[in-house]
Length: 203
Image 1 (cartoon, rainbow, N blue to C red):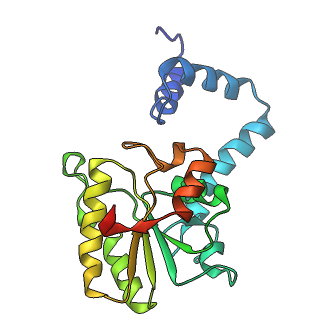
Image 2 (cartoon, rainbow, N blue to C red):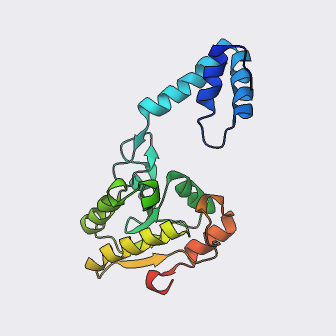
Image 3 (cartoon, one colour):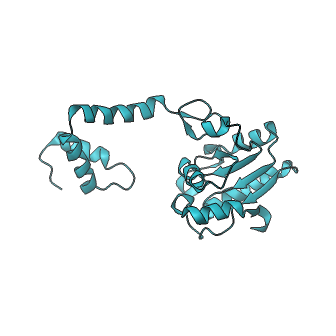
């Protein structure tokens, strides 16, 4: 794609680094921003700047939050003794949309994947184990992707939790197709998978 302006080309190149955005889509976004009013453009840039500088990761569950502790973790209406372990923030939002779960979460920030250079120490598994002990957690729900990497991470966490015999370790029912990410599952299927969770050792 021949671009007559180096400034426009630089903008397109940067926009194209976003996941799922190709050069043609990046060009449309860049031209849209170029045509927008100064106030709209300033609001757009301001939102991105604030996202980077002002957002937090919850000190307890590691989900994104406007405050040091997220609203879910600080809610008295949630069952604080049940923790649902997920790969990323998108999956927290997917499960919340089902309105079937009233516990709290723990976001790992990924799954164990040596091929991608992601090891145990790159995730918040250590913080999860500390949290289970510190907060006397009663149940840990493993809600990771039904992939080889997700299953490997599930097995590792399950082994780490063996030191807490009082903790019930469950996993979501396999209404989710093998290889699927939770964020792409429909809300009914995902909701039923949470409600009908089973002991991890039987999964």
